[in-house]
Image (cartoon, rainbow, N blue to C red; front, side):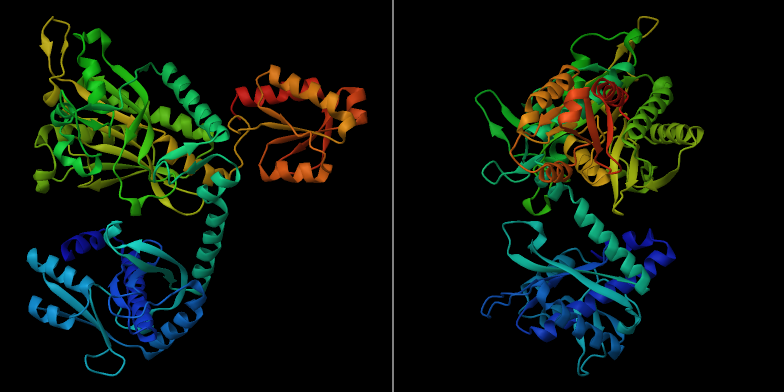
Length: 604
């Protein structure tokens, strides 16, 4: 536990480390304040995070009266936290034996569990006293640290939310109360963060998905299993069609593979037992044991092998929007960002060693082309390399690692794209390049990944016939998923656009709004003219006031609203209102149709 913590902190820049230490101290101030206010609760655990800190409490320990903590209690808790900060209590570290730890935390099952885990691994057991041991107002917690020198170092802080969290994220364990907070060195930084959090709420893909009728997750169907509604299915299909079009231009051929496969396939690929915990339990059938597909690559390898291959076929690019299934813990599921059934924008490129560089470059260019179309700009690349000091984690082929990492670095340098290097973050079968995004709500996340694999050829016996007619086993595989999964990419786009999709992606592109019932016939003619050109259009012929129809269309974030009345019917025009606002413009219907068709076809 402490070793993992030290490795994480070692990667932080000095300023980041100081902020992390201050936030970690704020987390101790939080749990001390809660314990002082609610003495019956049990302290579980809580770390500093990239955005602040949190702590988990057992508010209803066995034998004690349950405590209900809500956001209404935050002013009271923050007041007590400020008192503890003003006390300027020193943060004092100490190392103790397992026996001392068991006695010190007697009666707290959560601390006892951590003690036993640390003792079993032979790790040092460290504690921090907030204040000097034995003094009034002092408090102790099991913690790896580090911290600021005293509670007085905590400056601008705020509690953000309260939620339920299963112990260790496992729904089989008890539900705890988790309080989230954040802290910064200045009030200005804190206020900027709060503003961004409010913007994040406005752009929350789960909220927008519900309001725009795009998707939902139904408990009867199962957690983490997305149900795409008609409008969501339209957007999903447009993204997939776009990917298929661009992949066809780049020389990919499409395949389709089953959703299950025999155990032998995943044993051969090496995913069993390495990823067994992330796969659904085995299904024992009369002919074999089967697993739900958690990844597409083993299936694609079998497609490569289904007939002898010639050097003339290399590189062979197999693409599939393949459904995969991951056995994620229910406590880790988060809307579309982490699901149990996912449609992956997957492809595998089978190439010779001398083709790796060109293929990697083409994948990056394809990825950049996608992002340009979607208007995504704030991204960079991360070259994830192996660590020769941890050979147990990786295929032990130093020459291939050195060559592959060198080639990928060359591509990134020659393309002049921003990138960083990360040691000990590669896949077990080869180096990879991840595309990192800073979203509009300030969250950093990995969107795309490109991985080089030099293990598949050995496990599956991949080979081709070379120019001399000899069998050549130097087959390298590039795994790539530029648009991630439908689910994750849709979440990202929803937040990026705040639900206001560009016209080519919008589920409904145009809404026709007759001023009154007597304009219904012309409104229907307008709708028909748009439909004939493949434009997704709806007619709002309700007996509602025009202002109400306009408001509803705006709430659905429809790009264009066409108001039609007497003059429009007489002149064969439409009064165009844009989602973005501005003055209403009257234009001939034929001109509007042509302009929208052009906008959609060019994916502007």
